[in-house]
Amino acid sequence: MGVRSVLSRPLAKWVVQRQQEWMYRPAEAQQRWFRRLVDGGRQTLFGQDHRFRDIQTVEEFRTAVPIRDYEDLKPYIEKILAGQSDVLWKGKPTYFAKTSGTTSGTKYIPITSDSIPNHIDSARDALLNYVNETSNGAFLDKKLIFLSGSPELDEKAGIKTGRLSGIANHHVPAYLRTNQLPSWETNIIEDWETKLDRIIDETINQPMSLISGIPPWVQMYFDRIQERTGKKIKDVFPDFSVFVYGGVNFEPYRAKLFESIGKRIDSIETYPASEGFIAFQDTQTEEGLLLLLDSGIFFEFIPADEYFSENPRRLTIDEVELGKNYAVIINNNAGLWGYSIGDTVKFVSRDPYRLVVTGRIKHFISAFGEHVIGEEVEKALQFAMERHPETEVVEFTVAPMVSPAEGLPYHEWLVEFATPPNDPAAFAQDVDNRLVELNVYYDDLITGGILRPLKLTTLPRGAFQRYMKSQGKLGGQNKVPRLANDRKIAEGLVSNNLSELQP
Image (tube, rainbow, N blue to C red; front, top):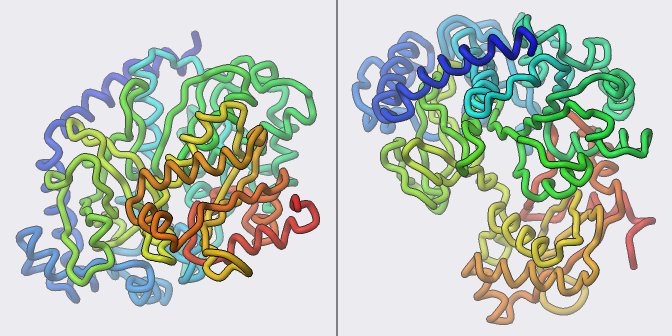
C-alpha cells in the first residue's frame, strides 16, 4: 500500500466528519452563507446598485435582487473587462471561466480567490467521500487521467481566462501531480482528435487506476484504445477501478461504457459548473448527489413550471419538496447574484439533501404545448433499452417536426447506436409509449390526433462526433443538448451524415 492511499484514509475521515456538521443542519449553513455573502457584497458596485446595506432578510434580498441570466449580468462583466474593481465581488476575479452560450456568444464567468475552494475542495472531497466509504484508496497510488480542456490560459483585462477544467488543472494538489496524466504538452493540444491520439500514446502502457471525464468523450477514448489493441479496457488497464464523471446523465452511456471496460467498476458522479461546484455523489449506496450547502453558495430554487411566469416563487433549501423539478439559482462569493445556471434538478432526499439533475430549463420541446423535458426523454429511452437489452446507445437528441411533407407533426429522435435494436419499430414504440405515460400533455396530443408517434432516425457511427467537429466543439467539456425546440441541431446532424443515412 502506497503513501497516498495510507494518508488518504485519515484525511477522508476528517473531511466527512466536518461535512456532517452542515449536512444535518442545512438551513443554518445556508443562512450563514446568506449573511456572509450580503456582507461581502455590500461595498461592491452591484451591492450599491441593489441597496445591500438595507438587506437584512432573504425576503428583502429577493425584492432587491431579481433573477438574472448572463445577458442581465453582462453590463457588470463588461465593467470588470474594462479594468474596474469591486464590481460584483471584492477586488477583481482571479480567473474568468470561458464558456459558450447559446445566445450570448462567449461567456466570462468570474472565479475569485474566495470561490476557488468551492471548485477545488469539492472535487477533492468527492474522492475522499469515496475513500472513506469504501476504504479503497489504492487508486491514488497509480496513474490518474482527467480528460479535459486545455490548461493553457489567456488573459482578459489582466485576468487569466480559460475553460473551467483548464483552470482546475492549475490547482491539482502537488501530491497528485506526479501521477497525473496526460502531460502538459499533450493537454494543451487544441485539436481533440490529435490530442486524443497523444493521450493514448502516453497512457496505454501505464497503470491507469482512475479515469475522469464527460461520458461521450471517455467513450471515444475507450473506442480508440480498443481499435489499437483489440482488447477490453480492463485488459489494457487492469488497475482501473474508479470512473469519475459529470456533465450529462450517465444512464444512456452506462451500458456501452461498461461493455467497453469489460467489468463493473465503481463510479463517482460530480456536478461541477463554471458558476460553482454544486453537488457530488457522497455514497455508493444511495441515489442522488449531495448538495454542497456550506461551500460559498446560497441556493434558491424556482419550481420549473413557474420559471417563465412573471413572479415565480424563490424557495430556500428548507422549502423544497421531494420529486419536484426546480431551476437552480445561485448567489456566491464569485459575485453571481440571483443567477440562473440553467439547470433543473429534483430532490430525492432531504436528510441529507441529495438531488439528481433532470435537464436544462431552456432545453425542452414544447412546439405543441407538450413541454417535454430532459428527464422524461432519458427515462423513456432507458425503458426501451431495458425492453431491448441488446441495444447500446452512443448518443441521441430529440427535435420537433412541425411541418412534415405529409401526415401529422411528430417528434424526431436522432439516435446513434453502438448496437441497434433488433426491432427498431418496436423500440420506437416502446419509447413513445413510455413518454405518453410520463407526460400528460404529450399523451393528450397523441390521443387527440394532434401528433403522431415519434419517428426514430438511426444515425451512422460517429455521427455526433462529426457534427461536433463541424461546430468546432469536439472533445473537452462540450455536450450535445438532449432536446431542442427547433431543428437546428437535427438538421446539422443530418447534413453532416447525409451520405451514410439509412434510406
